[in-house]
Length: 234
Image (tube, rainbow, N blue to C red; front, side):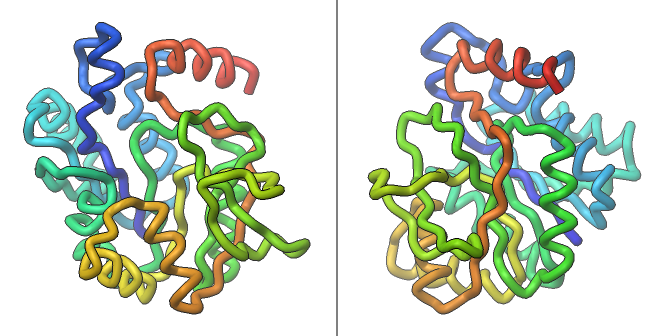
């Protein structure tokens, strides 16, 4: 199984609040976000870890290249590219993900490791279906609400609550056949990750939700302390 990290965002909100380092290098519980994910993915038996970083942030590239030297066992494959958004970043990682089931996430997701390992185990039990990480903890400026039935099958995605309990956690376990939905979105110039998730449903793929206790995104400086407190309680 492969893993992938989208770490090519500009981190503009953090920069506007005075944080001068790129988002992938933000430290949570003494560990850079990108290092934390690579370590966890390796512990989850990753065959490879594909990473895309922004070429406008050479510090991120240098950090990942050093990580590749110090931890060859992580088997990192690095893409350096400036992109206009996560969907385009995903498209640049897609050629590295087409031959095996994979887990994709953005670099700023913070979660309990125990939740994540259970999530990967659940996906590996049936990798023919997409498994989306969801949470009922809502602390996002523009959450994507996830409609589910009683078996936790995903029925739709919504920009408004519409009686939904969960929101998307930004972690996706997918079969490589589902990259066809990415191609459709790109062809139709629908370039947000939530459009990709909707396209999976439209294309008839089986999509299931897996609840995490809490998933935090690091979008603001205040989120760093929230994440620190959350992980200390683990």
